[in-house]
Image (cartoon, rainbow, N blue to C red; front, top):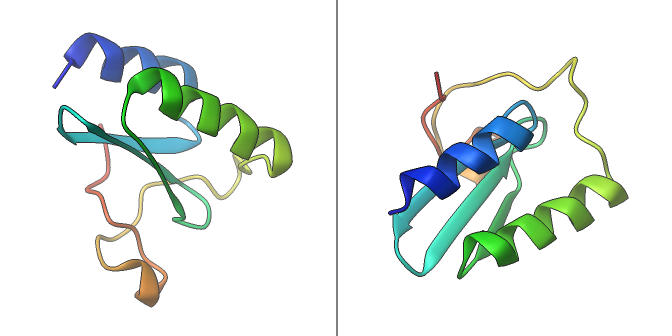
Length: 83
């Protein structure tokens, strides 16, 4: 896991997405509003997906807050809140 790359993503996009890098070839970003998840095999690819996702449907800062952990089917997030 590259802490530097995770820190960079968090710095720029942390108000809108929660990040995780569970293995070298899996990078995840979960939207803070609807908990949908983006997957990529590199931080660069994930950043491209985040930009496209955010451009198509910006994450509301009013509803972007950490929430309880659970499966996406329950409407809750997959990751522990950051911070």
